[in-house]
Amino acid sequence: MGRPRPARYGARDPGVWLWRACWILAGLVAVGALGIFFAAPALNLIFKGFVDENGHPTISVMAQTFQSARTWRIIRFTLGQAALGAILCLILGVPGAHLLYRVRWPGRTVVRGLVSVPFVLPTVVVGVAFRTLLAANGRLGFLGLDGSWQAITAALVFFNYSVVVRTVGATWSQLDPRRAQAAAALGAGPVRVWRTVTLPALAPAIASAASVVFLFCASAFGIVLVLGGTRYSTLETEIYTQTVEFLDLPTASALSVLQIAVTGFCLFLSGRAQRSLQRSLGDAAPSPLPFRGRRDGLPVAVTAAVVLGLLLAPILTLVERSFQRDGAWSLVNYRDLVTIPDGSGMVVTVWQTLINSLTTAVWATLLAVGLGVVVALLLSRRPTSRLGRTSLSIGDAAFMLPLGVSAVTVGFGFLITLDRPPLDLRTSPVLVPIAQAMVAIPLVTRVLLPPLRGVDPRQQEAASALGATPWRVLGTIDCAGAGPIPGVGDRVRVLHLAR
Image (cartoon, rainbow, N blue to C red; front, side, top):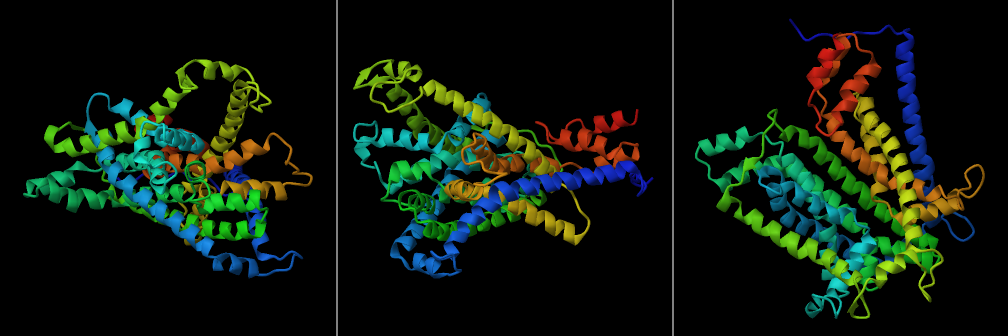
């Protein structure tokens, strides 16, 4: 018996037309949101770099910007610190990925959660934490690194370390162990097995993590602004400076063009690595290895040094300073959260600010998850035509662009684009959650795409052959595959459809 053929609905079946219409409508909604709330504001601001004061097209502003020695110094520092940050994250993160995802030991889940904390902290908070730690009166003030490029690099590694650990670790946990076992059985030592079997299999995940970390480091804003000030400017901070302090939109637009080019290149590399990643995974579902003492000594030493020296030290220093006022231990700082201290210049309490932030975050989350699910489902389709596959590749890159484009570019683009009815949102409270949602949609999509693309098409074909409608296949196979444990229970759901 051959593979069961999926049931085919007639071309005039109302269900088929409704199914196609819904996909078209979902695509139009997703593309429309991207176009209105990202592409139009960003392009409108960038367009300012190609016109003169009278509105005539010109490239003189672009030429003047890139003839400036300051511009090239900023470009060199941006790319240099991003490359150094990515390299250090890989050197420190790969041993952590092995220890936290490939080896089984008590407390592993707790340490995984601890490692993920820095990535969810606001970048300004990260900058303040390192500034407090490295200040002259800080715990590490004797190092003299306050306001240095080394402090910026350390903070970037602190922020992006978990990206490498999670990306490489998730792949490492899925590698087919039989390849390494076969190499060891043929006489290869541990180093040779790592170099000839494990490393090539992890290479796509490492390349993907490196490109994403490079992108995050190159587009860092709060960390660089707090730790480096105007001495160490990056493309992101310079765009902010030119826009806010000098009101020089043409120069800021020229720099935004370069930043978008860097973003596109990083996303291109990440996309190629992601496509190669599936070929490195086997069909086996390996379980974590037991802790092997001396053989896992190096990952333990590196990870312990990173967690204790790099991750915990800034956070604990920030907590310690929160209980101090004028050099003495006190709870005054926490009492001030519910009051407006005299001379602070605040118009609302910190508590009210927190409520406003949480309200904005809830609305941004709802928008980002709703549109992110739609985008992920669209990008997970498997078109048979070359045109369809090309369109999906272009769409994948387009929906990832907000991840690396300057927030200043998007924000000021909002102000000069959404300034007339029916989308005059400059004074509307919905503007902030919309802007935040546009940046978060790529993150939601990246989380959902791997499990959606990993759904076995034979599961879908079997469900269709058993009479399931496309809607039911989508709900019971595709969407369920994007759950916490993708793939578990797929066969049970198919059998359920047969009843």
